[in-house]
Length: 429
Image 1 (cartoon, one colour):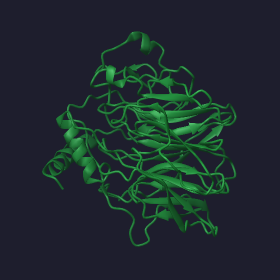
Image 2: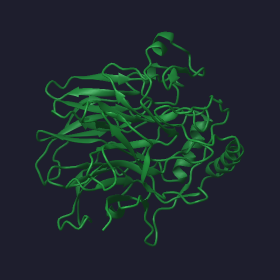
Image 3: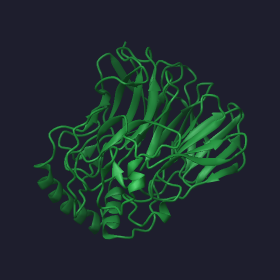
């Protein structure tokens, strides 16, 4: 551990200890969350559990009626999953490659992230996993594509494979059962660094590809010019190759999913730091074409962030999200789960909460389900998987990221980038 990482751990632990005494008793969750008044932090809370991994048969805790097993293991920081029509499972293995730190806080945050293996050398590949004998454990592993630039989101449309690298969307010709060939073609470029993940989602008719592009900074700390084209969901027209911003003011929109009743696009968004443990909450929301969701000027509708130079016209049109997911839960993964996938769970959204690093009492670190009815969230969230943290919050056995419906439609697959595992959740025997 570096000297700076040790110092950050000591100072961060002290700050977190005193802030924990004033931490809200309840999370800001649901359609009408109780969001505490902002408390600006001169020194931002830094609290990150050490990456321990899973040992001696230890696995996540399942909701009643479910069981979990390792579908694939021995990966290098698996982040995102795509299931192909033939049942092959693709996993993007990548890691943040941080740009040069500009402030002391940047240095401290990067030192902390290195200590817990959250940043560093990236594998920069997508691997293919196949469960040929149908026992729920992949026994075949192949490199699908490598030498990419922090690959993340994936989509297969009409024999063309789209890959979201941090610097843009590339497309490759696809042949079933074979690795990708050639360097592919860049369709649209994005600015790298900052929030680097580029999730992809094809429209149901295959004519559009949507991409999440997060902000460079927390609250446009380096000005709005460097944020141009960021904090947004982009839309790529497959036929013409033209791209545009579909929705904006989304600080870091990662997972996306289609809600089948209304046909609306939904996403999960990581909100800003430095205002308290629960302020503001990350959120799940439907996304309107042309919609603006507040960042950096305001949050949860039109609550002003007075640390930011204001634009009243932008604030006036800011839309309020649909469903709060708790402060700093780092909700990343998202998929629609239809009724009948898992026993005891109806229609709804499944969300991989990667977990906080910037609050006095850790939050997230679980896979949750939000029930839906008539196209909207219809009740409190429920845990599907938990137990990713030690009781004293010092160790992380795993951290949930991407989630999707498994082959056959009767399981969930979830990427765990600390455990280096793809977990498979099914009905208990």
